Image 1 (cartoon, rainbow, N blue to C red):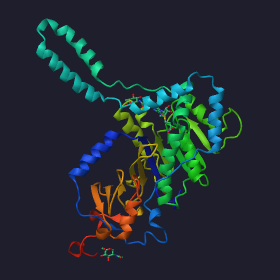
Image 2: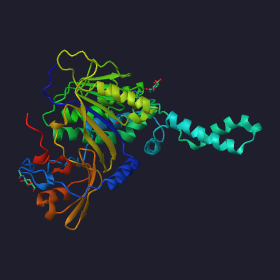
Image 3: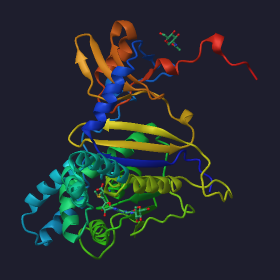
Image 4: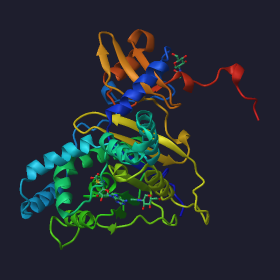
Length: 406
Ligand SMILES: C[S@@+](CC[C@H](N)C(=O)[O-])C[C@H]1O[C@@H](n2cnc3c(N)ncnc32)[C@H](O)[C@@H]1O
Ligand SMILES: *[C@@H]1O[C@H](CO)[C@@H](O)[C@H](O)[C@H]1NC(C)=O
Ligand SMILES: *[C@@H]1O[C@H](CO)[C@@H](O)[C@H](O)[C@H]1NC(C)=O
């Protein structure tokens, strides 16, 4: 199948973790680039737009759940006779926010060896038998105990009440990024791994409902799949689904034969028990991203991937996302991403930028040094937006470095 529609995308979204932000921050200090970017004046980037609406702005100020979805969710909650719903929602919300990734087997092994040594130092030979038990006991006490969540009918409903709006908003923001940057992209097929309540399907329908004709929802929980299907049917078990072309599967089809224009995993990778499992799933998802071109039978799509949008965004719903696109990065413009809250000060603005080459840059932007356009754009930008600048590493090489013409 020929695709003139542009790149295909793999999106992963997850809970925003403060810890990750700190790592970035220390790296930013280590690689502080003093020289600053110049405004991207290659293109008439503002056109007739005001600075307030410069094309790097990607925020969605407010996202509304579709009314039909709200009605369906409310109906399901009313019908269920679950006690203490509000308390359960609060408890699950807290639990999800304080959840860590599971400890890796190698890390456990390392800790066990360390503890064993410590105990051995203080033990005489007749205590050897007790040693193993003590090590295990200490490990249990000091190691984060990750537990798999089993989404039963009840928990699925609580999850829906707790996370339907936040999940929908985060995914909408991610889709908005692709749509704003590539308005001509008209995906026809989508796969959602760990689809849960189906918020991804709803958000995708809001964004690309005109072109999407197939939505593949994959979730290991039968109860979740059933809930998602009910939501699509207005909260009942029968009737026509609000979004046509939605299919439900309990297992991720590993065959790379069928690919999808957009593949999404939202808040689901952290549900997997180990790094190996996550890597496995992401690789499978990546293989399922994008069409085969021509009659190619190779299971691996030869087109390289690039990072389309690394991002951390604040607001009510904080989340992290990565959008991987097939194709070549030249297809996208390469403006740096703002990775922390923008600090507006008198006559200058602090922006922390993640540049396309991976460098972090702390830019202090003034009208005098960088021109009024860039200064005003920076002042109205926020965390998660992109700044319309060409960063130093992106500047074309000086004439002396030009490669010989061929
Ligand atoms: C936290 S929910 C996220 C739901 C949805 N993506 C959202 O954003 O609202 C995670 C979902 O992943 C599903 N899940 C966990 N392990 C899975 C696996 N190995 N394969 C498929 N789905 C899985 C769970 O059943 C659950 O519905
Ligand atoms: C862009 O700005 C740079 C530095 O201010 C300047 O040297 C260059 O001529 C400008 N290019 C265009 C197309 O205006
Ligand atoms: C995780 O990986 C292990 C080892 O490959 C496998 O046995 C297990 O089924 C996987 N679990 C999930 C949920 O993918």
